[in-house]
Amino acid sequence: MSKFQIGLGVSGGIAAYKAVEVMRLLQKSRCEVSVAMTRHATEFVQPLTFRALTDKHVIVDDYDPANPDPIAHINFSQNIDLLLVVPATANIIAKFANGVADDFLSSTYLACTAAVMIAPAMNTTMWEQPATQRNIERLKADGVHFVEPVAGELACKTVGTGKLEDVENIVKQVLALLVQSPKSKVQDREKTTLDIGHETLDLAAERLLITVGGTREAIDPVRYISNYSSGKMGYAVAEAAGARGAEVTVVAGQTTIDTAANVKVFRALSAVEMHDAVMRELPNATIFVGAAAVADYRPANSADAKIKKDGKETMTLELTKTPDILADVAKHRSNGLLVIGFAAETNDVVNYARSKMQKKGLDMVVANDITKEGAGFNTDTNIATIISKDSQIDLPLMPKRELADKILDEILKLRNSNAG
Ligand code: PMT
Figure (spheres, rainbow, N blue to C red):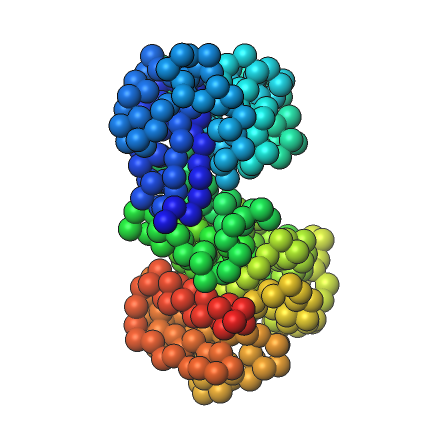
């Protein structure tokens, strides 16, 4: 049975052929698709292509005698869960933003009460034009969702922003919106498993906030206290969650790797900055994962100027406690927020980790014995034990990316057991 009804609007750009791929992927993801095209879009792709694949009349012109529905723009727009426009030209965006309804697609937009998502594609200069950006801002303010175009080589042989986002990413964002929307038909979290091709978007209903990397605590303008965290473990969780349909925000300290794809990243180098950034982003999160190695102490007084040796053989630094981000998050949790911590230990790993889970009020802790070869800091692999109130899973050496999926599997089990 089809889960969602999608109205797919196709406007006249060279990327119109990719709308066919988007439609096929939506159908594979159990969506029923009805297609509306602008007259210019039919110059790029024949309506017959969509008609053959949807088994439905493709509407270009309301007044076409071949159109079986005399008030098509009303009926079309009232029977869909989402109006998706792929590709959206600067012209159709301008019409939507200004309430112009001079063809079937623009009339449908005006008559539509469902969510609207727009995937623009156009030449870079047209994209950057203040008029286009103004229209986009206006539509965003009206509640329209955008799948931003990406940078790349365009049909006009120039390189710049304006290329249609990858079709799989468009469909992922569509499905995530349909599941997360307050009007969503999908109420039960267990039903939020959506298949997109080979991938399962079982985290489409979740918004993860993840701390990543090590913090840097300034001694003076040239020196700091830090640790060996590379950010690999935290970013692996971010990447895996994004691939499973979650909206992911990362607060990153010092890292040695680039950010993961499709992840919003805020930099926060010290424990205090990380704490502030986390508390600011927390109200939007449904799952918090503390993978960062946060310094427990920082210099009590960071000097404004470089500290001089002045012939001294020793130097004493006074340290003061940093805020415990994870404990604060757990203390301020609301609306079913799940709180997951990591524990980097060198001995009695499971007992120390379990006691951290209890003291900090966590739902789950991932313990890694950093003395083991291939585990812990700055490695591509890890050896971990996933501990929650009712279970303990000892895992062998594996890539951090694989471990990230195992952690997310356990988080989902917790979510479903809490929901049920
Ligand atoms: O980044 P990589 O090089 O890939 O290395 C991964 C890792 C070893 C850093 C990661 O797997 C890990 O174990 N992270 C937690 C390291 C740590 O600081 O553990 P902890 O036992 O000191 O802290 C326990 C938990 O409290 C952690 O979730 C930590 O993020 C959090 N914490 C600690 C202190 C503090 N002031 N605020 C916190 O939020």
